[in-house]
Image 1: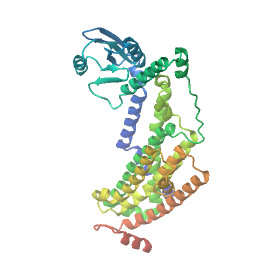
Image 2: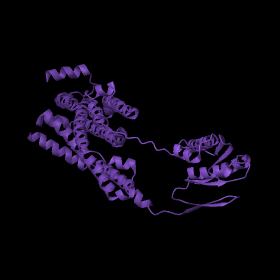
Image 3: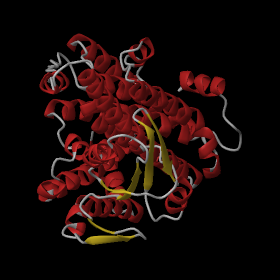
Image 4: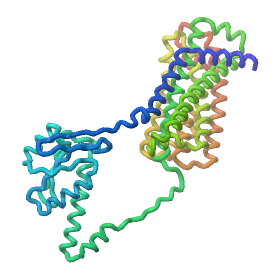
Length: 422
């Protein structure tokens, strides 16, 4: 235990004094500070935008008006009624009626003089002109709704229904209520994605660092001296647990600063749904995140450390850890695709929830976005704990054997044979 404590303190101190570690942490905290204080930086920037055209000068406040929308309904009965309806429906635009022909209207839209234009040919047909059609442009959907409602009103009035009854029929309010008996996937999606991505980055980053540190010790022959003065289990667990604590401290610094900066600027963010949902994580989910983060990190860090001890040269690290990296990335892809598809309880995800290499991400995602029985969570954690201990002991044995592997590319059969003899 004394050997473990000495190694643990030494490795942890080396992480905390590492300039790259400190620099990355400070950089991430600074970026989060800029993002969280952004509403305060841009607050109070109201002004006026003036749009000049040949027909009229349109003044629009910058608080939401997008620009000038031209409207033409030449030859359509009740043109003024349609223009008024469009002005109410498109409140974000300054709707201006024009008598220009269609060619002139197209020229004005193409030149940027107007944002867009609607030309009505009849109560049920129109042409929408826009220079660059955005993928989020919903103007035609709004126009379809407006014209459809107006056509229905006119048809009912012409059919003998009094205007009062028409307004009553069309103005009826449908009342619906949703009672969620489980989890709200949309509400939980954002912070679940952030947590999964953070786990992905930390495991790959620190796992690579563990493998690199072990390979550096081996290439400098320092490992041969260390292995004679300390037990392999103490060395392996000391290195891995110190890296785990360093990664956890970095996450606490990053997410803790995010929570602090958000609370300082909560009023400025207002009712932003995405931001509010990110910081509305239940405490129970934070506990689960901590459990799966620690166990998942230990699982892969032990594997990275074991593989790093088998590398003969530092340049061979990337090739040696590639299978482990691909295994982890495959699990990450499965989880992300399941989240995006909204099916986190698929058969594949359920299987991944019990496989120790994928359960840290898969089971955490299911807990966050679905209802998982308590016994299923307990089984997953139990399997993961047993697997971490087994992989840790096996990694320590590989670490001891790896000292003797110089010059030749180690093969799995040779490593297993050497472990049995050790």
